[in-house]
Image 1 (cartoon, rainbow, N blue to C red):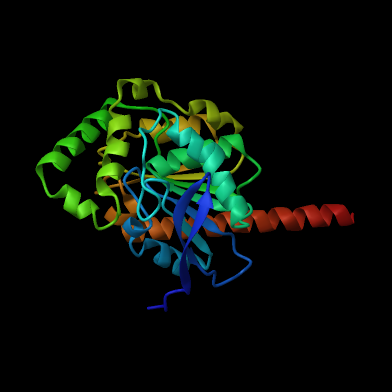
Image 2 (cartoon, helix red, strand yellow; image 1 turned 45 degrees about the horizontal axis):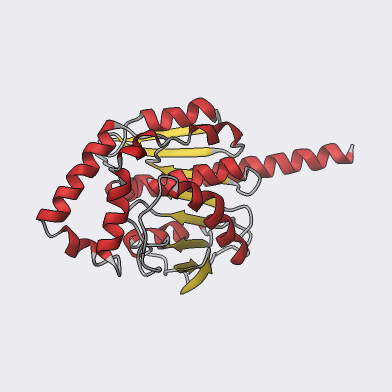
Length: 277
């Protein structure tokens, strides 16, 4: 087993909020940086060892961060607005990349993180190399609302607060910040399909066939508007492919990146040859 890549924990002030970060050094400084955007109840810690395993598999440098209100970042102090993911994609993420001097990364987004990545890609199409998305949301489905309602019951009646408390410093604020906005009647009209036609980078979407928070309609909506989209549906997999089907997810991500970089190299060689003629 390969040794874990050197990593460094830190924090950065973005949009007036202190955000926790984890930076994993690249094995090859010429490889692109992967920026990981977690799910609606995620954090740096909840990714567990997946970032290290992805770094080992790809040789890329990897930035992981906890959004405002998550993990060990600043505590959420207000009710989230319906447009909170728009703010993350249009304001927070670009400022974060600027402050950390990250240019043209690959964005790897899970669930809400995937939605934020799509918003960023539609708003700033020239600022990234590719998108790798796990179970992204582009609109609200009845299935999502039903499962988030079940999560509310579980939080009130089971040991879910204790379990989530392993990954969040302010677990009640984190949970209710996520749950309340998704169950707000005004959120039913949330939709980011308008961002998709402007996206110019390739996209890989990975989704579990048994995803309890979204159907295949989410990723097919992405492909309908961004033709350079590949979809992988994984059997025996729910909402978190990197946890439910870790090896298959790692293998597909590494394969996709290798093919993408090969295509970029071919394009560079072809362009250079044309300039010499």
